[in-house]
Image 1 (cartoon, one colour):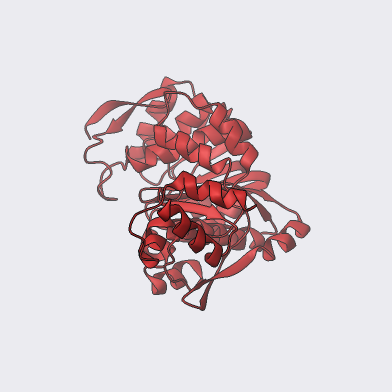
Image 2: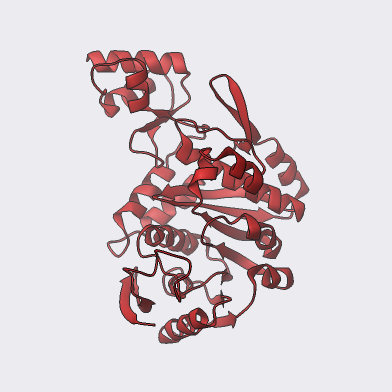
Amino acid sequence: MDLVQYREGKVEVLVPNPEESWKSADVPVFFNPRAARVNRDVSVLVLSVLRPKDVLDGMTASGIRGVRYFVESSVPEVYFNDLNGDALELARRNADKYGVMGTFFNEDFNVLCHTKRFWAVDLDPFGSPAPFVWSAARAVRSGGYLLVSATDTRPLSGASPKQALAKYGTILRKPEWYPELMARVLYFLVFHAAAIHGKGIEPVLAFAYEHHVRVIARLREKPSLITKNAKQIGFYEVDGKQYGPIWAGPLQDHDVAGEALERWDSDYSKASRKILELAAVEPDVVGYYNVHFWAEKLKLKQIPKFDSVLNALREQGYVAERVLWSDKGIKTDADEETFAEVLRRAAKD
């Protein structure tokens, strides 16, 4: 296996050839330097705020995520796990370079999570997290954190309804705000898994970047929280028909996003900064309006300026913000009729 020096965040580690190591799950050691880098940047900044006592890097591969948690998030103890012995040896080399207080497991993720408990569990599989999230939720201590990624965007977005039902237990159809839908389906999965183990969830952060979707939640053994969560499960409409269930509660802890943003510097990707900036102000509203979609629907001759639309909505007393899910989106509590009228006026101006 050819290894190269690779710098990301505040660490420099050995990784497989970044040009090839992300194209298939069959490579000797999987490594994604593209979308997963933004995923890691945001996660590292968030955990630097949350400061768990330890973290399980459940599918560690090169170990870069766990090393970054130790170096950049100041997590004092990191557990590295991978079924691939070559990956685990590479992770050990990278961890040793930075003196990481690490424990290494060469176990099936679900088996490990059945026997061990952690203050934070990071689940970042190739594809869907569905086969692993139930074990992950079991392994998180009360008051700890579960970080879950998914790359199977077709079922999550509603583009593959049969797969969505099979993997996530929900009936979906793709809405105009489907990038956000993916996070709401993941939160629904985490809620269900946590509730089975007597834990409720408190959303911390959710975002999507390219083909990665990630949610971070705090889990608590608190029956009243499970009851509250159950009331935050809802449905959405497309063409007058209901789909779901999905998570309909808040997606972001604005304070955590704001504190994580304060820790951002030039060692991190610009995309991670934009995600945190928008997460810190995102209104607690399900879905958003795709301005380009609505401009076409209303047969407008030009796309209205976003600032004009935002200001007009705010002047009428509505919340209105750009969204982290799409550069074409506006999230507001205004109804469709009001939003359409604002767009018409803004287009004329």
